[in-house]
Length: 412
Image (cartoon, rainbow, N blue to C red):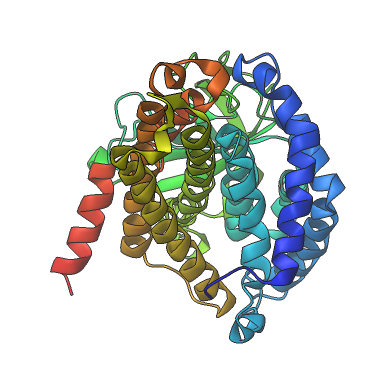
């Protein structure tokens, strides 16, 4: 795949019209935390029939799971004709939304992709029916709770949250932080170490995955954090104190590793999340470049547009190189998905590492190109620069991506 198809361009243009009508007028409210993004996400899904597509796909996934198969659909063979199929249609809204509000994509991706996706991959048909559909259609808000105050990048090994058996139930305790959608989540996918009273070191204990619901006794959801950027994506903490759940809240309803390891589930989600970051980076880079080119034409200094100056031309050229490189990574991901293939963790890490660094560098260069105006909120590159920085932090820091790539190379 080397360019968008005609059909994909039509979808892209329709998404752009929606964003200009529904998102752009609300940017200030989203940026100041006055407007949670969830109604806008629901309207996007309803406008483009994404909710109905989710319902149709959900039905097929449940049927496959009930029949003893996996929940993944067969490969989209349209990829053989150079069309990215479903993967492209998923990524186009992500790219376009990131021209203005990357935080909306983060909120949507965590709710649908991480929370909903984990339940659909690891849950029983009954659990999929109970919690999965409402997340996939955005009728409810989901959170994916793995990060803790003392674990950070050591999310699995350093995890301290516990699940202790008590008869046919479990008692959950722990504290999760930096949880996207945490303050507003209706459904929470919660990771905890099994406390079975054995001498197994805490780092090596089995990780279990539970589904929690807002309002459960002992579950507290904090108010949204104040952050450097990504203000349109509410982030908070979760506090669990003796939260009692039945076995039906344990994903897969079994502790057997074959029923769905919490560690494997988390690592699989890391691949999905990191690949999605490339599409987010592409949207942000495209917008920074567009704004910078227009400013270079319009801004007059010493009687000439600043775009006539070679140093400004160098900045623009580097931005375009970054855009092309990230776009090619996104296109490769679409082609792989269409062919029924998946990225390895190392490949997803490489994709995320380069894209996140490129987005941050392009955004900061855009601020520099705009000069004093770039530091002012009304010119928008200031917001995009703040939003871009977190791309190098969440879904695994740059440093973690490097270790995953290097380990893969050294173990070949």
